[in-house]
Image (cartoon, rainbow over all chains, first blue to last red; front, top):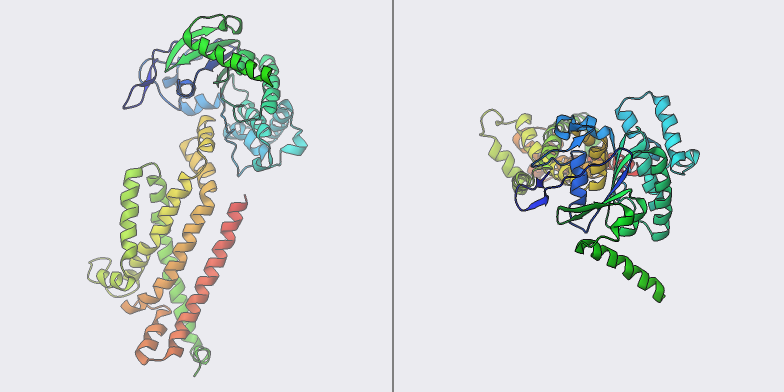
Length: 243
Length: 210
C-alpha cells in the first residue's frame, strides 16, 4: 500500500501490515516517518494512491467513509474536544450521530466517564476548558469508545502530557485495552510507550516498514533504526543515573 | 430653531425617514449576508480564489460611496434613481467584512477539533453546522457588526440618489446651510448605529461565552 501527495515522494510506501483482532499494534517512528499518515489511511481521512486497506476484510474504499469512521474510535494528541460542548455531549457525539435514544446516550456517557476514571456527576456537565490535559485525554478516550467501536486509532494521545500524568494514563490505558479487547493501532515516537503498551511494534522509517516485533524481541533486533531508538532509551538511563 | 425643536416639529417626517433608513440597511444587510456567508464558506478551502474575491471586495470598499452611487445610476437593470440602486451599492459595501470574517473565522477553528470531528464520522455538513460555524460565530458576528455600522453610515449618502432615509435631512441642511437640519438627520443615524452595534455586541459576547 502506498500513499503519495500529488507532488513529491510517497509519504508511505510499500507498507504491508496486518493487525490482528484484539491486539494493540504500536506504530513507532521518528517525526515524518509516516505513522500519522498510516493511521489516517485506516479511517479514510486519506486514501491510498496504490494498494488497498482491508478493514474487517473489506477494502476501505468500498466502505461508506462516514459509516467506516463511526465504527472506528479516534483519539488525537490535543484530544480535539469540541470546546462549545459539555464533556457529556462530547462523549455522546457518535451515539448521537447514530441516533441512539436520548436515555441510552445519557447512560452510556455516565458509563464511559466512570470507565476512564472521571466521576460522571462531577464531569458530565463541565466544559472542556475546565479540564486538565490528562482529563481531556481521558474524555477523548471515552468519546472514542462511546459507540463501542471494534477498532481504536490513537495518534500520540499522551505525548503532550507531563511525565507523571502520562505514566498514569499509560498504565490505566494498558489495563483498559486488555479488558476491552479492542483492536488498537497506537502511534507514538516514544519507545518506552511502545514497549509498554504494544502487543506488537511496527517500526516505520521514512515511510517504509522496517519490521514488526514483539516487545521482547524489539530491543534484541539489529536494524540500525532500532539501535537508534534503543540508544535513546540508554541515553534516558544515563541521565537518570547522573542525577 | 434647535435641532431637537426641528425634530419635534417634523417628528412625522423624522420617523418616516428613520423607517426608510432602517429599511435600506435591513435590505442591504440581508443581501450581503446571503452573499457573504455562503461565499465565505465556499472560499475557506480555496485559498487562491479567496484572495481574488476578497481583493475585489477590498477594491469596492475603497471606492468613495458617493461615486459608487453615481456609477450605478446608468447601469441597466440594477441602476436608476431610487432605493434599489442604493441597496445594490450598500450591499457591495457591507459584504466585505462579512466575507472576510467568515473565511478567517472558519479557518481559525482549531484544526485538531475539525480533524477529530471528521475522524469520528461527522458528515461535512455536520462538521460545518455543528462545529465550524458555532466556533466561528464570535468572529462572524464581529464582521456583521462592522458591516452594519458601515452600512448605517453610508446609507445617509444614499439620499443623494433619491433613496430616502435620514440622509435627506443632511443634504437638505447642507443646501439650506442649516446645521440644525443636518443634525436632525445625523443624530438619529448615529443613535441607530449605536443601538445596532450594542445589540450585535450583546449577541457576539453571548456566542463567545459558549
